[in-house]
Image (cartoon, rainbow, N blue to C red; front, side):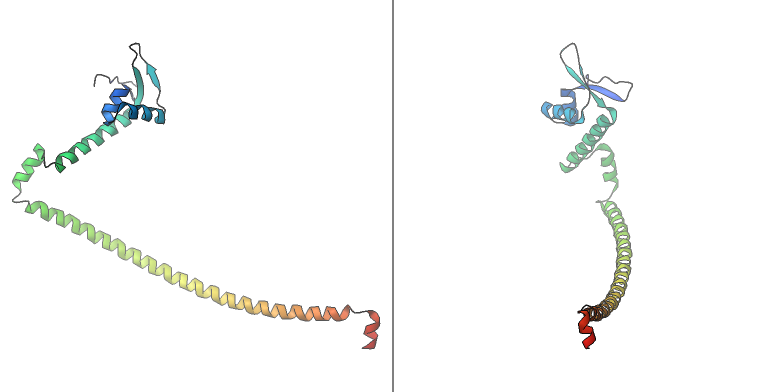
Length: 174
């Protein structure tokens, strides 16, 4: 890319077309990205606009493109030169399959262990919740009993007050 001009501050000044080529998108998408990220612009004398793109962004995009390229080549059945030598050493891929099966078996064993730990934790929490529920229901029963007793005392007190509130001359008749 001739558009690359490394800057000492960890940025690269790229044109919209260079950003689009780097990302594998169109110029409009590159312009929207620049606006979204609010990267600074520089207008050159030749009429081209340069954008200050951080180095980590350029490196991350390049790495993703390499990975995507490898995935597409594997999907198309293409084998790289380093993989071709390894594939020739394996008789009918048996060693490769056994290694994959072994790795998957180890992963399954680790997942089963995590599952058993999670189940034990869930059982402990369920037991604690049941205990808390029993304690709360016992306390609720006690509180309901106390409330009923308090209501009876309040009714008796109101009756006593009702007797005291009659006219003074009625008290003499009793």
